[in-house]
Length: 305
Image (cartoon, rainbow, N blue to C red):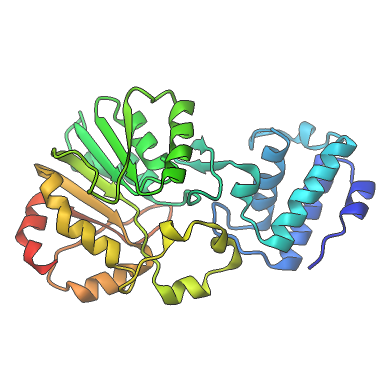
């Protein structure tokens, strides 16, 4: 579907006009939704309001406001790029929400969509006392959203986050500064555990790459804009997951917990290790393929990995 920018700029005048037009364009083009929205109206809101530097909670009277010509031109271009180039909305607005917090994103990092936000809020208290974990390590941090949420939810904890990509860490540092965590959240460049100091953590969490080559080839166009380094993994999507399983016990405290998101590789992991007692977590707001193993379980089954 081709977008007529000139017509839109000339004929549309209000925010509501552009919202309606965007929805029509999205529906007609059958764009893929999977980066934070599940319907065309919410996708239009997520694109248009941040593009105008307006909050997603903007109320109806403002939605009726007329736009300047330059604003109309910019919105028409944003919608055109979303439809014709299939660029994810979050990359067009540099804004993505995770656990009720807004994060800067661009194509150096994955767009946040992990159930770890719900895990940190609702599940983690089941494993630790009221004080929570004293130390947390996140591998493959990307934008830093999970580590930042962990640091804000458990301010008493020492939180370290790492990523192999220096580009991703630049984005994480930007988000860290936004939430004033420069002095309390440590960011390290590391290939998994290779650059992590030798110490024990109460909690190790990670959303590592787990998309196998066949799935990578069939992903919608929107996902092709995300960094392959953060998505793809060989060996049925398990190559990096297995490496974490092999090394994590050396970095966990005696009562520590490992929690990994393996998404679509869940079946492959269970088939590979049918005797390992992975605890698969359930989430109220969606998400699957997240398991937990205790430090003692990792040690007991270490030889299998």
